[in-house]
Length: 148
Image (cartoon, rainbow, N blue to C red; front, top):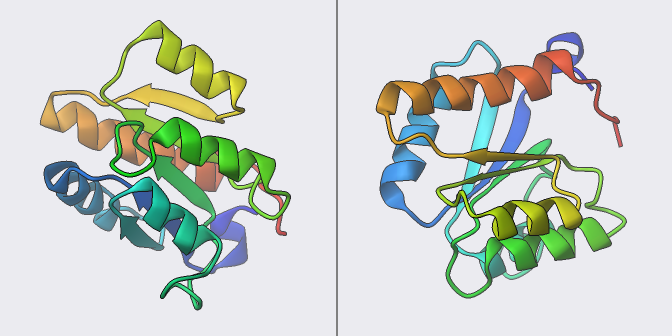
């Protein structure tokens, strides 16, 4: 799927517990040329509820892309990633880890769990906006994604 070809709005699930990072990510994606709908959940268990359409998320759309922080309450990002990649109905959704951790063990573990991309959040506001837009541009205009 290429969003420019399909003409439909893309669905992004942002799994992030830091309100400032949520606000910054939403602002970056809002100015995008790609039509998107961003859904936000603040912890790992809420993310799984959204993805598995349960506990108040029964009408949630399946996201085209997941932006996942690692440092989450109730269930960390690695645990969420493991569940996603083991589930045959979710495993094809691209998952981009967007986190503050630069720890080699976090990076290695994420790739061992089949993350599609690992990005360390830039501290600089302008760089953060550039990274967020680059992620969206890459996944929705360059990459060919499955339609199911």
